Image (cartoon, rainbow, N blue to C red; front, top):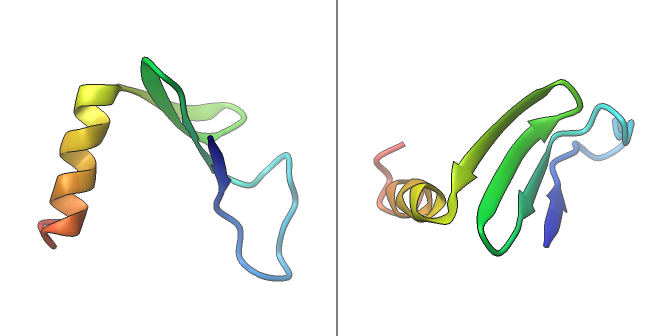
Length: 54
């Protein structure tokens, strides 16, 4: 699953950051600026967001 994080009316697909959720990893960012997390790391990040820790 790929989620594009653009603001309405300001979408430039090559520059829009994405969250690319794969079976074994999650890639977050845009073209030359990315962060790759394991699924375990991503699950920790999700929980921290859900619990208002971030």
